[in-house]
Every structure is written in C-alpha cells, then in structure tokens.
Image (tube, rainbow over all chains, first blue to last red; front, side, top):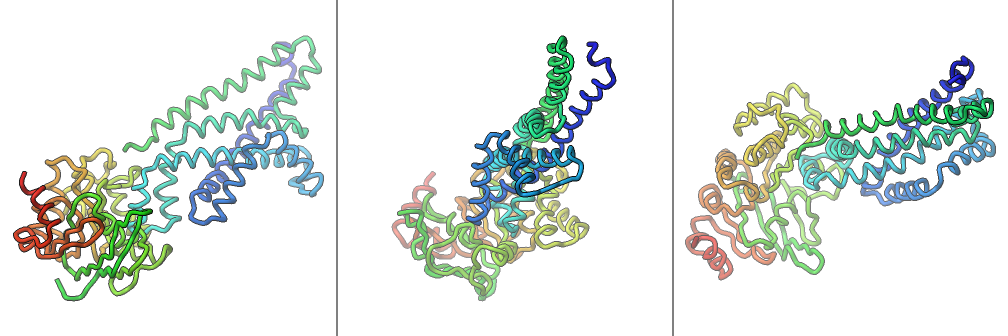
Length: 224
Length: 247
C-alpha cells in the first residue's frame, strides 16, 4: 500500500471519489425531480404530455449512457456552445450531471409508474369524489403511496447511478476511474492493490446504501 | 323532505361496450329524500350511483344536480363532487394518512379551510360515528365497520348537499353491518338527501322514503318501501324479492 502513503496519490484518490459523490448527488436529485415529473406526465389525461413522457423514456432508456455523456460534451458544449462554468472541471461536471440526470430519470419514471400501479384504483376515486383535481389527487394521494412502494427499486437505481457516474471520466473529469487510471500508469507494480482499493471503496459505500434502502422500504411501506 | 328536486336523471343511457348498463333511466330525488336502489347484481345500480358524481361518465341523457347539469371533467366537476359525499363498498380511506387526516384532507385541501377549524369539525364527526378515540390510527389498524364509519365522516366533513352510498355494507363482516347502518339511519333522520345502493332490505324498509328497483339496466319500479315490499308490481321485482326474502 505504498501508493496510498503518498499524499499526492491520496489526493488523486480522494478528489476522484469526491467527484463521484457530487455527480451522484447532482444526478440523483435531477433524476428524481425529472423522473417524478415524467411519471406524472405518463399518467396524465393530456395526450401530448403522455407522448412526451413515453418518448423521453424510450429515447434515454435505450441509448448507451456513454453516448449521452459524449453528446452532452461534444453536442451541447463543443457544438452548441452551452458553457456551464468557466472552470473546465466544473463545466465537465455539470455536463456530466445533466447526462446522468436525463438518463436516470427514464428509469426513475418507470419505477414510479410501476409504483402508481400498486395503488388501488379506489384511492384515486375517493380523492376525486371529495373534489380533488387531477393534480391534487396525484400529489396528495397517489404519488406519496407510489413512492413508498418503490423505495427499494429507487435504491437500486441510485446505486447504478453512482457507478454510472464513472462514465463522466470519458469527457475528462478526474473522477475515480480516471484517478485509478492515473495511479496505475504511475505505479505499474501495484495494479492489483490500486484496483482493489477503488473497487472496495465503491463496495464500502454502496453495500450499506442497499441495506439502508431495504430498511427504509420496510419502514415506510403503506399498510393496507 | 321538500318538493324541490336535488338530483335529476333524465333518459340516461350508458354502454360498457355492447352491454347496455343504464337503459333510459329517469329518476328524480328530492331534497331530503332517501332513495334506496335495489336489484340483482349486474342490474346497473352501482353504475347509476356512480354516474351522479360522474365517476362514471354517461353516453346519453342528462344529469342535473341542484339545478346545474353535471359539468365535464375539470375544476367545475371537482367543485360539484365536493358537494356530493360518496361512500364506497371498499371504504377507500387514504392508506397513508391517519384517520383524522383522512377526514381533514378534503376541507383543508379542496376548500382551503383553516386546519384548526376543520380539526374541531373532524373530531366531532369522528365522535359522532364513534371513532373519536382512534383519530391518530391508520386505516389498516381499524376494522371494516370502523373504516366505513370513518369514510362516512370523511364525506360529511365536506358538508355535502347529498350523499351517495355504493353498497356500503357489502364488504363487511355481518356483525359490523349494524354499526354502519345505524350511522346511515341517523343521517337519514336528520334530513340528508341520500341515494343508497344496498342489499340491506331492513334498511330499505325503515329508512327509505322510496325504493327503486333496477334490473338489466332499467329502472323497473319506484315506490315507498311499505308498498314495494308488500305489493311489488313487476314480475322481475316479485321474482327478486321471492329469492331474497324466503331465506
């Protein structure tokens, strides 16, 4: 473990995972908000909104994430000139976060939609019968119950998102996979220890995340 | 009971595919009147009840509530529904809200009333239906009969002009039917306008002003309960009564 006793190397490692953490947070919040909106669109009575939601899911769920991240960089930034920060790292970070959010939102949308299907039709009828509008029925009665039903799958999506955020390395951000590549290039004699430390760091955070979501899912389950 | 009509159905038709579930149904319910709808299953009585607040849209004919034709889907319809209480066979209490929240939700979210005011009203309604001491529990922690009484309180919290009951006791264990019917009977006595779809002939006899008999989507007979049960006019009503009253 000589590699990690070097302060500079440790810094590369920590910075790499800090980017992963930030990408996961930004991408996760974006994907959750977008995903819930898309799910609401897909169950709405307005055909245009339903079509938009369906098109979004079909487009982004079936496009490789690497392509989406490349498009964010070469399409949005290089070609269309969308610059999100003067700092090159921050710019790449936000471009990556957008790509992760639009991609992951498709999966969040489908998870929430399957959650909506677990809510008995009578719940919506009762809400409409006391005079709630479509929007109130959805936000006060349906989505809170649907959300609680899909906490465990949302946890899986979050875990996938965290690992997927390494793909932002392809547009130059020094996140964990790029950090690992750099350390391996400089320390060819310690490939396996470096690899194990990086893989182990992911496992160290993600295994408890999985259990935490399982626990939450049980705790928040709606009793019927 | 006044002479003024509150709910008027005029030549209402509805099809589920090829099935003619409501066949030229006309019915007028006066303010304060209690109308009990009976009939064999599949006769369209639930559909009739649900069409009054447009949970089931109709294909043809008109339904008027308090002088206004039922509006199309949207805010005016939501406003109308808030004035018509509905109680379902399967209770449909909001599973993620406490009993008290269930009762307060309509007035606070739909009518935008102050929670403090609504809370007092909700508690007195819950006391009235005998559930006041369970206000902080969740629906799944209550028995069916208790849940249905909460559902009635939830509908009453909106201070509706009329109440619709869609087989309110059909999903209940026999020993819980009485407690729900008791609440409904007291409502009827207070002059609430009610349309009740039920198989409880006892309730029809003692609480209804009028019994309406439906079969095959048609409104076959309409008469005061004493008259209907003693001398049903149509063969279908006679046949139906002979099947349910001989056991």
